Amino acid sequence: MLVIVGAGAAGLMAAIQAGRRGARVRLLEGSREAGRKILISGGGRCNVLPTHLDPTRFVSDSAPHLVKRLLGSWPLAAQRQFFEEELRIPLQEESATGKLFPVSNRAREVRDGLLAEARRVGVELVTGVRVRDISPAGSGWRVEVDGDSLAAGGVILASGGLSVPQTGSDGIGLRIAEQLGHRVHPTYPALTPLMADPPVHQALAGISLPVRLVARAGRERLVSEGGFLFTHRGYSGPAVLDISHLVARPRAPSQPGPTVAVEWVGEADRVDWEHRLQERSARSVGTLLREVLPARLADRLLQEAGVDPTRQLTQLRREELRALLGRLCRYPLPCSGDEGYRKAEVTGGGVALSEVDPATLQSRRNPGLFLAGELLDAFGPIGGHNFAWAWATGRSAGLGAAGVIG
Image (cartoon, rainbow, N blue to C red; front, side):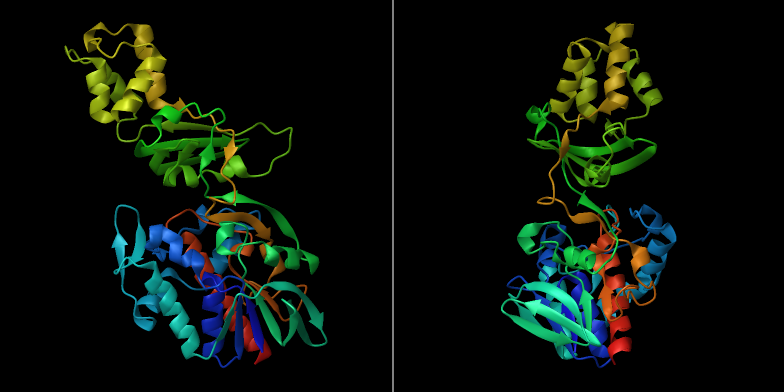
């Protein structure tokens, strides 16, 4: 029997692939229902896949060629074909974001489609059972669960990381992998909102707009474009989530802290702003800024620059122009930390990719043990990339395990 720990995206995919190849599969899930992260993803719509998958955008402390190989084991077109032609879940592109959603816009359709296929191929799903330990037992494995133990010919760890703990993520797979001798890179929350303490922009909470963020940490520099949201505690939105790991990532005390600056996208080019602010017009500078930016934000920037919003553009002094351009073209966002795993969409760090066979995802240290999904050391940007990682690694683990245990 093949035991799979975790009935999330990777675990469900592994179960389907192994079951299709004749393996007797028992899928264990600690929560009351399977696929809870699938249900809440994409605001309840489930962004199943991205329209374009770029391995270079994934973050890992492992070798980049391993990330590329694991993603390439199941190309994006084949993944889409699986959902549309095999599960009969048509997908549609949201062109503004580059995401693929089910046409129904219902995450439950995706979760239920995966469950139905798992049942069709004979997978036994057991929910509400917590795995406590896994250990070698002769030629197989012993899986310790609440008050009982199971004998297994092979085990797939697909229990996720530490993100969104209310869905059941408790890091048990990471702990077990480490206990079994695997190298685990330090974990941290990723794709998570950022905090400012004190919350200097609290008065702007609720304002959203497209931006370009530039984040630096040591020699690392990231540029992110997309939606941005001021919150009561700091900042959120896609552009923020995609650079948040630079703030959350563990670093030595001697390393300089990360910095984040924002450009107001669409009108952020300095030459363009200079041209607008120096036009020979009787319009007020406040009127100009409010045409481009949300009114509360425009007023805040003018206040910080020490510029009277009623001042005519032709009356702007050189020092006022310089101060205003600085806030329009590279505005610093003070960041004191992040919102942690509670709000994180994924876990950074995890089991080093060199610890598994890239073709089968079988452990190089423990034959018969396979690892897949979020507990592996890689994550991508928002927009379906991490589902693509889960589907691809889950498939490889399921096929690999079915081939080993027969």
